[in-house]
Image (cartoon, rainbow, N blue to C red; front, side, top):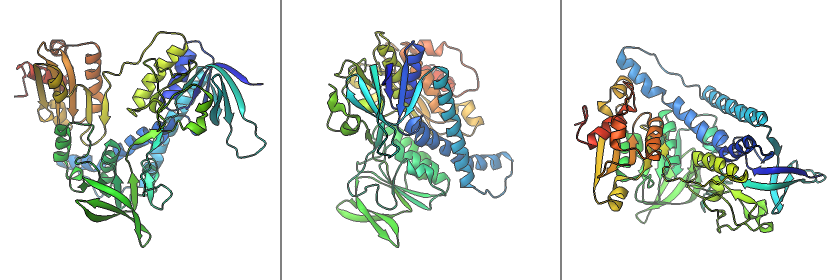
Length: 470
């Protein structure tokens, strides 16, 4: 007999498990199907392990600061196996918390690979490899596709070649490599520089475009490159990766720069050229439904996350960029509400973006350039982190916070380069969502000393009322 459910969710990453839990909270009977590990790539192979290693890698800068304070330390011995064990314990804790929450809300979790038999039926293969295992049928009123994305594979740098790996595998290495070549100068590549350079590796970045981090304005990129030589010394821009060769079994990236061949050896060549949806046409059996999608697998959805098939929705990476975990989780909540019959729609106008370099980078809303194009008059306020009491007391003085507003002092955007930018951007995002003005920000009392005080000071600077920034 087939399993019958109100809501079937395919994929248990941040979008999928969030959708499943929210659907259950809305009173729906929910089945969640996952082919690998609950928590998805973000929790197990991406966001969480990457940020754990970045945190662990910060020891060297902290120790230098301790010595300057008078706290003398001896030689540091890095046990990378122990660091990896600690990172894995963080993942295990979060995985278990997700499983406990799914169980608490009565979500049935089924292991296996789901494919559509028709617009209201899934078949789930348990992937055991035995021929006598029949697919498990699931009939549903509504399905949500949350199948995530995979690293893009570059011709000539296929992952089946020795030493050529993705951003997933580099987080699982047994020891700190001496040299790494990263192909791709986006945030994944630059975060790889952050953690492994601090652990002592030599990291080289190869980027096809004329600068790294093209998703951020040049002012931000210039700021972080000025902060540390690790973001500038070995970055090869306008350089095309061609393929891989081997020298005594060690991979060597062959690339072209200014019509000349360059060769960059490394213990690993990490391909970090972006991601693409894993909602593969064949694997999911989309041809048995009315779903429409692009040639590269992005499923077409409306603002309610409905596909062209009335009974199926798609969220997160499966529905296209931006490929961010917090976007997937947000869409999961919306999709679950739609599945429960509510009138909800996605609004990502104020979507924060964070990069965990050193210093961190966080943005939300319009950049100064975009605001200038859309508005006749724009006011800008900037607060250097070096004038922040909290930044000085923690030796985190690099960077700045900038607010952008229109001539009526309506907040339009915020840019942060500095420590705890990933935390402070939350207040800026809320201010934009609540249509706050500069006056609203400057009249909101903030605790002292804190990093979010820089938002107040930047708003005051935009009004020529700054106390510390001048």
